Length: 310
Ligand code: PEP
Ligand code: MN
Image (cartoon, rainbow, N blue to C red; front, side):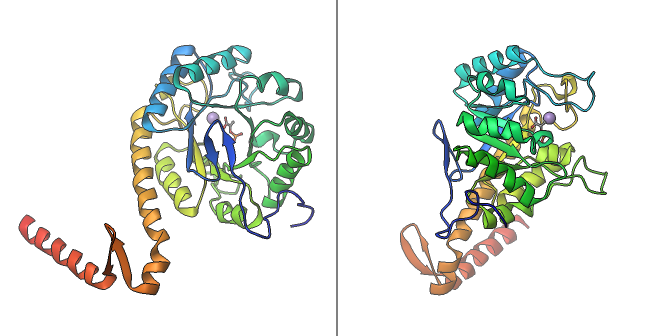
């Protein structure tokens, strides 16, 4: 890809790790969760406590909402940021929140640990320059009509201002398909890993807009190699002031986190697969055993178990 001087994959294949108060994007699998919008102190703090308990490492919540209609809820602004600050003090979770205007970058940055650039502002070049100058970690969402090359050039704008702390986020694009809110393009995960050293998250909430699709797409994102997820969770989705149809309940989020954990353990077991295939041996509790003998043994045990259940 042309003109990607700072963002392009490095010749030694090393990857950027962006450390936000101990949360390491590009190294750990990071789940950012929280409401679409900050609505009230109770709603935000209760959600924050619940997502933290379920294992989320960061809290999201919009105080400035870029809405399709000028009459829709636009967010609480400064009041919302103060609520996020309280939620952070309560839970210790660092905050991700969107900034929509160049004039707000410095003071929103006093509350946010990560500044989010939303899909609608991905190519707002003055905003990109401003957040670049801020030096804050930036979550750069993919524009809904943007190619990978356009997206990575937007990251380049931020890095070119001297800010290397950019995390990308795939959130779906507009296609001819109208069944889903957007078409979640999971093929971007390996593509981003091929073309750049920056970490990539996936947002299955805006990416699908359909509650029942969030869990399978989250698991698929993990398997595709995403560095984390950004997911909308609300203590009472039907009462939400924005995106009420796509926000997970706390129970749904807890279940998803458990499935992610199990899938990660499975993925880690695959890390050793090359070695097992080459040596024909696998290491179990510190002892090397023949992989095929182990497979026969496990198969035998399963058959005994099945016979007993019958
Ligand atoms: C959001 O994450 O709050 C949001 C508005 O998402 P997007 O910019 O991807 O539409
Ligand atoms: Mn939303």
